[in-house]
Image 1 (spheres, helix red, strand yellow):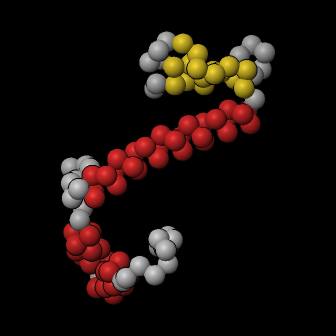
Image 2 (cartoon, rainbow, N blue to C red; image 1 turned 90 degrees about the vertical axis):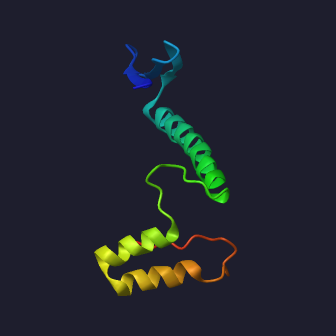
Amino acid sequence: MARQIIKQPNGLYAVFSSIIDNFVSVNMTPETLLEKDVEDYRQSRRLEIEEVIESLEKGEKYHPFTKSWDEAIRQLREINGDERADFFDDFGRRPIDNEGNCDIINS
């Protein structure tokens, strides 16, 4: 674990980094700790996703188990059947008409 949340003697919280063996934040309330952690995660995740997108745009796999669209549809078909696979395959091949807005689909 690179970062550890520690409760200080004064009741507030600190974050200690085992990478640099030093505190990276001190005297945080639970609210500020949560806000900082969420923002740090958001920034870290953004960098990860940008790297994934860069790899995919180059036609590269970003992970050994990365599936292509067709491989994912084939697996979906095997597990969930033709109707669901056909729905998503059609959905994913439609021309973009929503300015890149995300369609959230909960199973």
